[in-house]
Length: 474
Image (cartoon, rainbow, N blue to C red; front, side, top):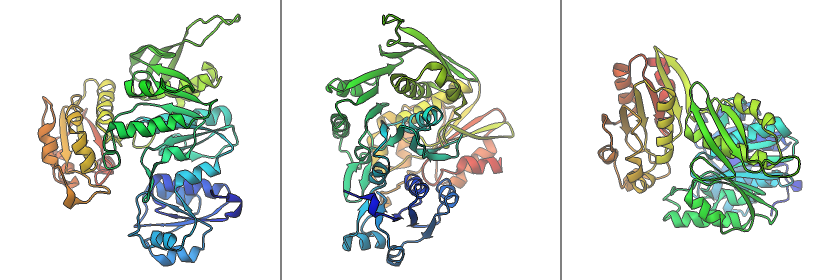
Protein backbone atom coordinates (compact mmCIF):
# COMPACT_ATOMS: atom_id res chain seq x y z
CA UNK A 1 0.00 0.00 0.00
CA UNK A 2 1.42 3.37 -1.05
CA UNK A 3 0.56 6.57 0.80
CA UNK A 4 1.06 9.34 -1.74
CA UNK A 5 0.76 11.93 1.02
CA UNK A 6 4.26 10.86 2.00
CA UNK A 7 5.63 10.97 -1.56
CA UNK A 8 7.17 14.04 -3.13
CA UNK A 9 9.84 12.68 -5.50
CA UNK A 10 9.11 9.89 -8.02
CA UNK A 11 11.77 8.22 -10.21
CA UNK A 12 10.81 6.23 -13.34
CA UNK A 13 13.14 3.43 -14.52
CA UNK A 14 12.36 2.94 -18.22
CA UNK A 15 10.76 6.35 -18.56
CA UNK A 16 10.93 6.29 -22.38
CA UNK A 17 8.03 3.86 -22.82
CA UNK A 18 4.77 5.30 -24.06
CA UNK A 19 2.94 4.34 -20.85
CA UNK A 20 5.78 5.25 -18.51
CA UNK A 21 6.32 8.69 -20.06
CA UNK A 22 2.61 9.49 -19.83
CA UNK A 23 2.47 8.36 -16.19
CA UNK A 24 5.49 10.56 -15.50
CA UNK A 25 3.81 13.51 -17.21
CA UNK A 26 0.61 12.96 -15.24
CA UNK A 27 2.53 12.78 -11.95
CA UNK A 28 4.41 15.98 -12.81
CA UNK A 29 1.16 17.76 -13.69
CA UNK A 30 -0.21 16.74 -10.28
CA UNK A 31 2.64 18.41 -8.45
CA UNK A 32 5.19 15.64 -7.88
CA UNK A 33 8.90 16.10 -8.55
CA UNK A 34 9.70 13.63 -11.33
CA UNK A 35 12.86 12.25 -12.94
CA UNK A 36 13.91 9.00 -14.61
CA UNK A 37 16.13 7.09 -16.98
CA UNK A 38 16.07 4.84 -20.00
CA UNK A 39 18.48 2.56 -21.82
CA UNK A 40 19.16 4.96 -24.67
CA UNK A 41 18.02 8.12 -26.35
CA UNK A 42 14.27 8.65 -26.06
CA UNK A 43 12.24 9.17 -29.22
CA UNK A 44 8.83 10.54 -30.20
CA UNK A 45 6.17 10.56 -28.84
CA UNK A 46 7.60 9.93 -25.35
CA UNK A 47 10.25 12.60 -25.86
CA UNK A 48 7.65 15.29 -26.54
CA UNK A 49 5.78 14.35 -23.35
CA UNK A 50 8.89 14.48 -21.17
CA UNK A 51 10.22 17.66 -22.74
CA UNK A 52 6.80 19.30 -22.63
CA UNK A 53 6.57 18.74 -18.88
CA UNK A 54 10.26 19.65 -18.39
CA UNK A 55 11.05 16.23 -16.91
CA UNK A 56 14.78 15.53 -16.58
CA UNK A 57 15.93 12.05 -17.54
CA UNK A 58 19.17 10.17 -18.14
CA UNK A 59 20.00 8.18 -21.28
CA UNK A 60 21.76 5.06 -20.02
CA UNK A 61 21.28 3.11 -16.81
CA UNK A 62 23.54 3.31 -13.79
CA UNK A 63 23.08 2.75 -10.07
CA UNK A 64 24.27 6.30 -9.40
CA UNK A 65 21.27 7.71 -11.32
CA UNK A 66 18.75 6.15 -8.96
CA UNK A 67 20.85 7.03 -5.89
CA UNK A 68 21.33 10.66 -6.83
CA UNK A 69 17.66 11.57 -7.14
CA UNK A 70 16.79 10.11 -3.71
CA UNK A 71 13.20 9.34 -4.66
CA UNK A 72 10.40 8.56 -2.25
CA UNK A 73 8.94 6.14 -4.79
CA UNK A 74 10.33 4.26 -7.80
CA UNK A 75 8.24 3.21 -10.80
CA UNK A 76 9.61 0.17 -12.64
CA UNK A 77 9.04 -0.66 -16.31
CA UNK A 78 7.81 -4.18 -17.05
CA UNK A 79 10.54 -4.39 -19.68
CA UNK A 80 13.41 -4.08 -17.18
CA UNK A 81 14.68 -6.70 -14.73
CA UNK A 82 17.44 -7.42 -12.26
CA UNK A 83 20.03 -7.08 -15.02
CA UNK A 84 19.32 -3.35 -14.85
CA UNK A 85 21.64 -1.80 -12.21
CA UNK A 86 18.98 0.70 -11.15
CA UNK A 87 16.34 -2.01 -10.66
CA UNK A 88 18.88 -4.06 -8.70
CA UNK A 89 19.67 -1.08 -6.48
CA UNK A 90 15.98 -0.49 -5.72
CA UNK A 91 15.19 -4.16 -5.02
CA UNK A 92 18.36 -4.95 -3.05
CA UNK A 93 17.79 -1.95 -0.78
CA UNK A 94 14.09 -2.62 -0.28
CA UNK A 95 13.07 0.78 -1.63
CA UNK A 96 9.35 1.41 -2.28
CA UNK A 97 8.45 0.65 -5.88
CA UNK A 98 5.37 0.12 -8.02
CA UNK A 99 4.38 -0.42 -11.64
CA UNK A 100 2.97 2.56 -13.52
CA UNK A 101 -0.46 0.89 -13.42
CA UNK A 102 -0.37 0.86 -9.61
CA UNK A 103 0.76 4.49 -9.53
CA UNK A 104 -2.05 5.54 -11.85
CA UNK A 105 -4.60 3.88 -9.59
CA UNK A 106 -3.32 5.72 -6.52
CA UNK A 107 -3.34 9.02 -8.41
CA UNK A 108 -6.97 8.51 -9.51
CA UNK A 109 -8.59 6.33 -6.85
CA UNK A 110 -11.22 8.97 -6.05
CA UNK A 111 -12.59 9.06 -9.63
CA UNK A 112 -15.01 6.68 -11.34
CA UNK A 113 -12.61 4.39 -13.20
CA UNK A 114 -13.56 3.14 -16.67
CA UNK A 115 -11.18 0.46 -17.95
CA UNK A 116 -11.17 -0.49 -21.64
CA UNK A 117 -9.53 -3.79 -22.46
CA UNK A 118 -9.41 -6.49 -25.13
CA UNK A 119 -6.97 -8.13 -27.49
CA UNK A 120 -7.15 -5.26 -29.97
CA UNK A 121 -9.03 -2.00 -30.44
CA UNK A 122 -8.49 -0.90 -26.86
CA UNK A 123 -6.21 2.05 -27.67
CA UNK A 124 -8.65 3.62 -30.15
CA UNK A 125 -11.67 2.84 -27.98
CA UNK A 126 -10.12 4.24 -24.80
CA UNK A 127 -8.76 7.24 -26.71
CA UNK A 128 -12.16 8.00 -28.22
CA UNK A 129 -13.99 7.46 -24.94
CA UNK A 130 -11.49 9.65 -23.11
CA UNK A 131 -11.73 12.35 -25.78
CA UNK A 132 -15.53 12.39 -25.54
CA UNK A 133 -15.53 12.49 -21.74
CA UNK A 134 -12.99 15.31 -21.78
CA UNK A 135 -15.51 17.35 -23.78
CA UNK A 136 -18.56 16.21 -21.81
CA UNK A 137 -17.27 16.20 -18.22
CA UNK A 138 -13.63 17.38 -18.32
CA UNK A 139 -12.92 13.75 -17.56
CA UNK A 140 -9.40 12.33 -17.45
CA UNK A 141 -7.89 9.58 -19.56
CA UNK A 142 -4.76 7.51 -20.05
CA UNK A 143 -4.23 5.47 -23.20
CA UNK A 144 -1.38 3.66 -24.91
CA UNK A 145 -1.25 5.85 -28.01
CA UNK A 146 -1.22 9.58 -28.73
CA UNK A 147 -4.49 11.23 -29.79
CA UNK A 148 -4.04 13.28 -32.96
CA UNK A 149 -6.51 15.91 -31.73
CA UNK A 150 -4.63 16.58 -28.49
CA UNK A 151 -1.07 15.43 -29.30
CA UNK A 152 -1.11 13.59 -25.97
CA UNK A 153 -2.08 10.18 -24.65
CA UNK A 154 -3.35 11.46 -21.31
CA UNK A 155 -5.39 14.27 -19.84
CA UNK A 156 -5.88 15.31 -16.24
CA UNK A 157 -9.32 16.83 -15.76
CA UNK A 158 -11.45 17.70 -12.75
CA UNK A 159 -14.46 15.67 -13.89
CA UNK A 160 -15.98 12.55 -12.37
CA UNK A 161 -14.44 9.94 -14.67
CA UNK A 162 -11.08 8.61 -15.76
CA UNK A 163 -10.63 6.21 -18.69
CA UNK A 164 -7.73 3.73 -18.63
CA UNK A 165 -6.53 1.54 -21.45
CA UNK A 166 -6.33 -1.81 -19.68
CA UNK A 167 -3.24 -3.77 -20.68
CA UNK A 168 -3.29 -7.54 -20.10
CA UNK A 169 0.53 -7.73 -20.08
CA UNK A 170 2.52 -8.20 -16.85
CA UNK A 171 3.05 -5.24 -14.51
CA UNK A 172 6.72 -5.64 -13.52
CA UNK A 173 9.59 -8.03 -14.18
CA UNK A 174 8.76 -10.00 -10.99
CA UNK A 175 5.00 -9.39 -11.00
CA UNK A 176 3.03 -11.34 -13.65
CA UNK A 177 -0.21 -9.62 -12.64
CA UNK A 178 -1.79 -8.01 -15.73
CA UNK A 179 -1.79 -4.24 -15.46
CA UNK A 180 -5.55 -3.99 -15.85
CA UNK A 181 -6.15 -5.56 -12.42
CA UNK A 182 -4.44 -2.66 -10.67
CA UNK A 183 -6.83 -0.07 -12.11
CA UNK A 184 -9.76 -1.60 -10.13
CA UNK A 185 -12.47 -0.65 -12.62
CA UNK A 186 -15.92 0.54 -11.69
CA UNK A 187 -16.97 0.23 -15.33
CA UNK A 188 -15.36 -2.38 -17.59
CA UNK A 189 -15.48 -2.05 -21.39
CA UNK A 190 -14.58 -5.27 -23.24
CA UNK A 191 -13.76 -5.00 -26.95
CA UNK A 192 -12.85 -8.61 -27.84
CA UNK A 193 -10.92 -11.60 -26.56
CA UNK A 194 -8.50 -13.65 -28.65
CA UNK A 195 -5.27 -15.47 -27.87
CA UNK A 196 -2.22 -13.22 -27.54
CA UNK A 197 1.00 -12.84 -25.51
CA UNK A 198 2.10 -16.49 -25.71
CA UNK A 199 5.25 -15.54 -23.77
CA UNK A 200 2.98 -14.91 -20.77
CA UNK A 201 -0.13 -17.03 -21.36
CA UNK A 202 0.15 -20.69 -22.28
CA UNK A 203 -3.17 -20.73 -24.13
CA UNK A 204 -6.44 -18.85 -24.58
CA UNK A 205 -7.85 -20.41 -21.44
CA UNK A 206 -5.06 -18.89 -19.33
CA UNK A 207 -5.79 -15.46 -20.78
CA UNK A 208 -9.54 -15.95 -20.26
CA UNK A 209 -8.91 -16.68 -16.59
CA UNK A 210 -7.43 -13.20 -16.16
CA UNK A 211 -10.45 -11.60 -17.86
CA UNK A 212 -12.77 -13.69 -15.71
CA UNK A 213 -10.90 -12.54 -12.60
CA UNK A 214 -11.13 -8.93 -13.77
CA UNK A 215 -14.90 -9.28 -14.14
CA UNK A 216 -15.30 -11.02 -10.76
CA UNK A 217 -13.42 -8.17 -9.02
CA UNK A 218 -15.93 -5.55 -10.18
CA UNK A 219 -18.00 -3.92 -7.41
CA UNK A 220 -21.62 -5.02 -7.01
CA UNK A 221 -22.81 -1.73 -8.46
CA UNK A 222 -20.33 -1.91 -11.34
CA UNK A 223 -21.11 -2.15 -15.04
CA UNK A 224 -19.82 -4.24 -17.93
CA UNK A 225 -20.08 -2.96 -21.51
CA UNK A 226 -19.16 -5.76 -23.91
CA UNK A 227 -19.03 -6.83 -27.54
CA UNK A 228 -21.89 -9.28 -28.12
CA UNK A 229 -20.29 -10.43 -31.39
CA UNK A 230 -17.39 -11.99 -29.47
CA UNK A 231 -18.43 -15.43 -28.16
CA UNK A 232 -15.57 -15.60 -25.65
CA UNK A 233 -16.66 -12.34 -24.02
CA UNK A 234 -20.35 -13.24 -24.06
CA UNK A 235 -19.63 -16.50 -22.28
CA UNK A 236 -17.58 -14.80 -19.55
CA UNK A 237 -20.00 -11.91 -19.01
CA UNK A 238 -22.99 -14.22 -18.70
CA UNK A 239 -21.31 -15.91 -15.73
CA UNK A 240 -21.30 -12.61 -13.83
CA UNK A 241 -24.12 -11.10 -11.79
CA UNK A 242 -22.83 -7.56 -12.38
CA UNK A 243 -25.07 -5.40 -14.59
CA UNK A 244 -24.07 -5.44 -18.24
CA UNK A 245 -25.02 -3.91 -21.56
CA UNK A 246 -23.99 -5.20 -24.96
CA UNK A 247 -23.10 -3.74 -28.33
CA UNK A 248 -22.74 -5.47 -31.69
CA UNK A 249 -23.04 -5.50 -35.43
CA UNK A 250 -23.77 -9.14 -36.25
CA UNK A 251 -25.67 -10.38 -33.18
CA UNK A 252 -28.57 -9.03 -31.18
CA UNK A 253 -27.40 -6.44 -28.67
CA UNK A 254 -28.63 -3.58 -26.52
CA UNK A 255 -26.90 -1.18 -28.90
CA UNK A 256 -26.95 -2.79 -32.35
CA UNK A 257 -25.70 -1.41 -35.64
CA UNK A 258 -28.39 -1.70 -38.31
CA UNK A 259 -26.66 -0.03 -41.26
CA UNK A 260 -23.15 1.14 -42.19
CA UNK A 261 -22.13 3.31 -45.13
CA UNK A 262 -18.45 3.66 -45.96
CA UNK A 263 -17.10 6.63 -47.87
CA UNK A 264 -15.26 9.82 -47.08
CA UNK A 265 -16.87 9.41 -43.66
CA UNK A 266 -18.23 6.27 -42.01
CA UNK A 267 -21.95 6.65 -41.26
CA UNK A 268 -23.81 4.13 -39.13
CA UNK A 269 -27.23 3.72 -37.60
CA UNK A 270 -27.84 1.90 -34.33
CA UNK A 271 -30.90 0.72 -32.47
CA UNK A 272 -30.91 1.60 -28.78
CA UNK A 273 -33.05 -0.92 -26.90
CA UNK A 274 -33.02 1.25 -23.79
CA UNK A 275 -34.76 4.24 -25.38
CA UNK A 276 -38.16 4.83 -23.77
CA UNK A 277 -41.13 7.15 -24.23
CA UNK A 278 -42.44 9.59 -21.63
CA UNK A 279 -44.42 6.81 -19.95
CA UNK A 280 -41.41 4.53 -19.73
CA UNK A 281 -42.37 2.21 -22.57
CA UNK A 282 -39.39 0.79 -24.44
CA UNK A 283 -39.23 2.12 -28.00
CA UNK A 284 -35.99 0.80 -29.46
CA UNK A 285 -35.30 4.06 -31.29
CA UNK A 286 -32.57 4.49 -33.87
CA UNK A 287 -29.60 6.82 -33.47
CA UNK A 288 -27.32 8.02 -36.26
CA UNK A 289 -23.60 8.73 -35.97
CA UNK A 290 -20.77 9.70 -38.28
CA UNK A 291 -17.00 9.26 -37.80
CA UNK A 292 -13.88 10.13 -39.76
CA UNK A 293 -12.23 6.77 -39.06
CA UNK A 294 -12.44 4.03 -41.72
CA UNK A 295 -13.38 0.37 -41.51
CA UNK A 296 -15.60 -1.96 -39.58
CA UNK A 297 -13.15 -2.13 -36.68
CA UNK A 298 -13.66 1.58 -36.02
CA UNK A 299 -17.42 1.14 -36.03
CA UNK A 300 -16.90 -1.39 -33.22
CA UNK A 301 -14.55 1.00 -31.39
CA UNK A 302 -17.03 3.87 -31.70
CA UNK A 303 -19.95 1.64 -30.72
CA UNK A 304 -18.15 0.63 -27.50
CA UNK A 305 -17.63 4.29 -26.58
CA UNK A 306 -21.18 5.32 -27.54
CA UNK A 307 -22.76 2.45 -25.58
CA UNK A 308 -20.75 3.33 -22.47
CA UNK A 309 -21.69 7.01 -22.60
CA UNK A 310 -25.35 6.36 -23.37
CA UNK A 311 -25.44 4.02 -20.36
CA UNK A 312 -24.04 6.89 -18.26
CA UNK A 313 -26.91 9.10 -19.40
CA UNK A 314 -25.29 11.25 -22.08
CA UNK A 315 -27.52 12.01 -25.07
CA UNK A 316 -26.81 11.41 -28.80
CA UNK A 317 -26.65 15.12 -29.63
CA UNK A 318 -24.02 15.54 -26.90
CA UNK A 319 -21.87 12.85 -28.51
CA UNK A 320 -22.28 13.57 -32.20
CA UNK A 321 -20.02 16.60 -32.75
CA UNK A 322 -17.12 15.33 -30.63
CA UNK A 323 -17.41 11.91 -32.25
CA UNK A 324 -17.21 13.44 -35.71
CA UNK A 325 -14.26 15.67 -34.77
CA UNK A 326 -12.14 12.76 -33.49
CA UNK A 327 -9.27 12.17 -35.94
CA UNK A 328 -7.83 9.03 -34.42
CA UNK A 329 -4.55 8.05 -32.83
CA UNK A 330 -0.98 8.16 -34.01
CA UNK A 331 0.11 4.80 -35.41
CA UNK A 332 -3.51 3.65 -35.73
CA UNK A 333 -4.32 3.91 -39.47
CA UNK A 334 -2.45 7.20 -39.41
CA UNK A 335 -2.19 8.77 -42.87
CA UNK A 336 1.24 10.33 -42.57
CA UNK A 337 1.14 11.95 -45.98
CA UNK A 338 0.66 11.68 -49.74
CA UNK A 339 3.86 11.83 -51.77
CA UNK A 340 3.87 11.78 -55.57
CA UNK A 341 0.30 10.50 -55.47
CA UNK A 342 1.18 7.63 -53.11
CA UNK A 343 -0.76 7.48 -49.82
CA UNK A 344 1.36 6.46 -46.81
CA UNK A 345 -0.33 4.87 -43.79
CA UNK A 346 1.38 3.97 -40.52
CA UNK A 347 -0.18 1.42 -38.18
CA UNK A 348 0.73 -0.47 -35.01
CA UNK A 349 -1.06 -3.70 -35.99
CA UNK A 350 0.78 -6.86 -34.96
CA UNK A 351 -1.99 -9.31 -33.96
CA UNK A 352 -3.49 -11.18 -36.96
CA UNK A 353 -6.99 -9.75 -36.47
CA UNK A 354 -5.63 -6.21 -36.24
CA UNK A 355 -3.61 -6.76 -39.43
CA UNK A 356 -6.68 -8.04 -41.27
CA UNK A 357 -8.94 -5.22 -40.02
CA UNK A 358 -6.35 -2.57 -40.94
CA UNK A 359 -6.02 -3.86 -44.50
CA UNK A 360 -9.79 -4.34 -44.84
CA UNK A 361 -10.24 -0.72 -43.76
CA UNK A 362 -7.71 0.37 -46.39
CA UNK A 363 -9.61 -1.58 -49.06
CA UNK A 364 -12.91 0.03 -48.04
CA UNK A 365 -11.45 3.53 -48.05
CA UNK A 366 -9.33 3.12 -51.20
CA UNK A 367 -11.44 0.64 -53.13
CA UNK A 368 -9.73 1.05 -56.52
CA UNK A 369 -6.14 1.51 -55.35
CA UNK A 370 -3.27 -0.94 -55.42
CA UNK A 371 -2.62 -1.65 -51.76
CA UNK A 372 0.85 -2.55 -50.49
CA UNK A 373 1.17 -4.21 -47.08
CA UNK A 374 4.53 -4.01 -45.34
CA UNK A 375 4.43 -6.13 -42.18
CA UNK A 376 7.01 -6.72 -39.48
CA UNK A 377 6.07 -9.79 -37.38
CA UNK A 378 6.39 -9.10 -33.66
CA UNK A 379 8.17 -11.66 -31.43
CA UNK A 380 8.89 -15.27 -32.30
CA UNK A 381 6.42 -16.63 -29.74
CA UNK A 382 3.45 -14.57 -30.99
CA UNK A 383 4.26 -15.19 -34.66
CA UNK A 384 4.51 -18.95 -34.20
CA UNK A 385 1.42 -19.19 -32.00
CA UNK A 386 -0.78 -17.13 -34.34
CA UNK A 387 0.68 -18.15 -37.73
CA UNK A 388 -2.46 -19.96 -38.88
CA UNK A 389 -4.56 -16.82 -38.43
CA UNK A 390 -1.82 -14.48 -39.65
CA UNK A 391 -1.67 -16.41 -42.92
CA UNK A 392 -5.27 -15.35 -43.66
CA UNK A 393 -4.82 -11.66 -42.81
CA UNK A 394 -3.52 -10.22 -46.09
CA UNK A 395 -6.35 -10.88 -48.55
CA UNK A 396 -7.13 -7.16 -48.97
CA UNK A 397 -3.56 -6.36 -50.08
CA UNK A 398 -2.26 -6.53 -53.66
CA UNK A 399 1.43 -6.69 -52.75
CA UNK A 400 2.82 -8.01 -49.47
CA UNK A 401 6.31 -7.45 -48.05
CA UNK A 402 7.18 -9.44 -44.92
CA UNK A 403 10.25 -8.55 -42.88
CA UNK A 404 12.30 -10.75 -40.63
CA UNK A 405 10.71 -11.14 -37.21
CA UNK A 406 11.29 -8.38 -34.67
CA UNK A 407 12.33 -10.20 -31.46
CA UNK A 408 11.51 -7.32 -29.05
CA UNK A 409 12.02 -8.76 -25.54
CA UNK A 410 12.97 -12.20 -26.89
CA UNK A 411 16.45 -13.36 -27.89
CA UNK A 412 17.41 -13.97 -31.52
CA UNK A 413 19.23 -17.16 -30.59
CA UNK A 414 15.95 -18.56 -29.24
CA UNK A 415 14.11 -18.08 -32.54
CA UNK A 416 11.47 -20.73 -33.25
CA UNK A 417 10.25 -19.37 -36.59
CA UNK A 418 11.64 -17.32 -39.47
CA UNK A 419 10.34 -14.64 -41.77
CA UNK A 420 10.58 -17.07 -44.68
CA UNK A 421 8.17 -19.44 -42.92
CA UNK A 422 5.70 -16.58 -42.53
CA UNK A 423 5.97 -15.80 -46.25
CA UNK A 424 5.37 -19.45 -47.16
CA UNK A 425 2.34 -19.66 -44.88
CA UNK A 426 0.49 -16.59 -46.17
CA UNK A 427 -2.48 -17.57 -48.27
CA UNK A 428 -2.72 -14.89 -50.93
CA UNK A 429 -3.41 -14.72 -54.64
CA UNK A 430 -1.05 -11.77 -54.76
CA UNK A 431 2.75 -11.55 -54.57
CA UNK A 432 4.34 -12.06 -51.14
CA UNK A 433 8.05 -11.31 -50.67
CA UNK A 434 10.51 -11.54 -47.81
CA UNK A 435 12.58 -8.42 -47.12
CA UNK A 436 15.73 -8.72 -45.07
CA UNK A 437 15.91 -5.15 -43.78
CA UNK A 438 14.35 -1.71 -43.96
CA UNK A 439 16.75 -0.57 -46.69
CA UNK A 440 15.55 -3.34 -49.00
CA UNK A 441 11.93 -2.35 -48.33
CA UNK A 442 12.70 1.28 -49.13
CA UNK A 443 14.43 0.27 -52.35
CA UNK A 444 11.54 -1.93 -53.55
CA UNK A 445 8.87 0.64 -52.75
CA UNK A 446 10.82 3.51 -54.25
CA UNK A 447 11.19 1.58 -57.51
CA UNK A 448 7.79 -0.11 -57.78
CA UNK A 449 5.15 2.03 -56.04
CA UNK A 450 3.18 4.26 -58.42
CA UNK A 451 0.87 7.25 -58.13
CA UNK A 452 -2.51 6.09 -56.83
CA UNK A 453 -1.02 3.28 -54.73
CA UNK A 454 -1.57 3.00 -50.98
CA UNK A 455 1.28 1.80 -48.72
CA UNK A 456 0.26 0.39 -45.33
CA UNK A 457 3.18 -0.12 -42.95
CA UNK A 458 2.40 -2.30 -39.91
CA UNK A 459 5.37 -2.47 -37.59
CA UNK A 460 6.43 -2.12 -33.97
CA UNK A 461 10.20 -2.52 -34.08
CA UNK A 462 12.92 -1.61 -36.58
CA UNK A 463 10.40 -0.78 -39.33
CA UNK A 464 8.20 1.53 -37.26
CA UNK A 465 9.48 4.72 -38.95
CA UNK A 466 9.30 3.33 -42.48
CA UNK A 467 6.20 5.29 -43.53
CA UNK A 468 7.83 8.56 -42.45
CA UNK A 469 11.07 7.72 -44.23
CA UNK A 470 9.16 6.89 -47.40
CA UNK A 471 7.58 10.32 -47.21
CA UNK A 472 11.05 11.81 -47.63
CA UNK A 473 12.38 9.37 -50.24
CA UNK A 474 9.55 8.81 -52.73
